[in-house]
Length: 119
Image 1 (tube, rainbow, N blue to C red):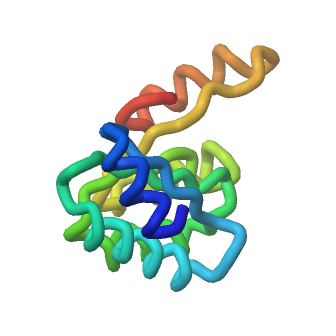
Image 2 (cartoon, helix red, strand yellow):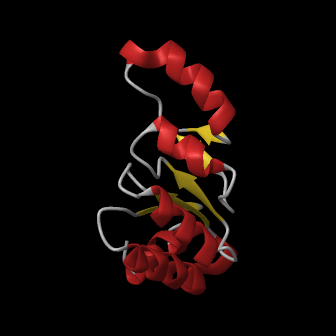
């Protein structure tokens, strides 16, 4: 989401913005999160959706370098195990998406201990 798009959405009354992260250098994600936050401030809540495209080290760096920006991390890493491994060191709440029905029960038990919430 470009800064102009973010500003337009906020001016139209959107109260939550979703920024896409992952699949590119984490430095680009950090810069995008900071730029949008500097522009919109507290006029809207932010969510950063990693779309399972961040590495464990990448999501830790994103959270650490954006520690002053309030946002929720959605599904940053590819696997539940990766999300479990970084969860305690994140500085932001972690939300996980629901899995396919074929793995619902085991995933649900593990995810409850991992995530702050789910989307």
